[in-house]
Amino acid sequence: GTFIDSFSEGGMLSGWAPGMSPVRFPEGAGLLVRADEYIVMQMHYYQSPDNEQESDQSGYMFTTTDSVEHTIQMLPLGFQGFNIPAGDPAYVDGVEFNLPFGIKIWGVFPHMHVLGSGYSMTLPDEDEDDQCIVSSDGYDFNNQVSYIFDEPIEVEKDSPLRWACRWDNSSNNPYQMFEPPQNIGYGERTDEEMCYAFTLASF
Image 1 (cartoon, rainbow, N blue to C red):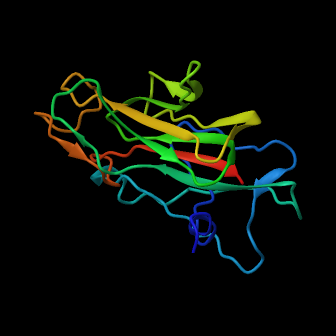
Image 2 (cartoon, rainbow, N blue to C red; image 1 turned 90 degrees about the horizontal axis):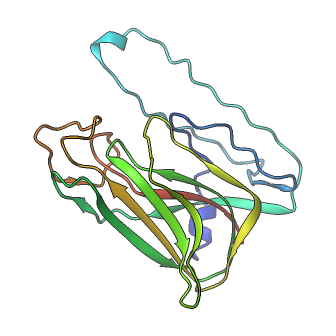
């Protein structure tokens, strides 16, 4: 299949993390779910001896419509090849995408784990200042933010799209899970790290 097909077959519709508000698209835009498709929800739990008898109170809610003018897909833009050095209070790594097609970005959900401290998504421009799409120096795992734009941001075919994360892997990080700190790479556990910009886009 093509690059686009890889996101439309069995792709990710949405995600939630602590602190997020409901995602609401502008009128005329939405995610496509066909009548013969199933929605599978994956839950990540924190287990401790104090909550072994607790029951799951999770739920979800969404609205539907028969058709929209703009069909949005979620692109899990990010990378996994980083290694955050033990003790580094401001380690930065990133990746540059050259998408083989133009897209309109309707929103971005930046996601890291407890060492995350900042992120930025930019459109580099050799002649002018880089265009900022999202940026923060105050990432908080317990208060993660989704950005939904009033108007989509257009990214032309073959334009470089740069995504970078910053982590605090020092002993001064109140969320540090290792003492002394250890080198940390990619993983799904909270004591591992991620660097994703879950990007809501139309083609």
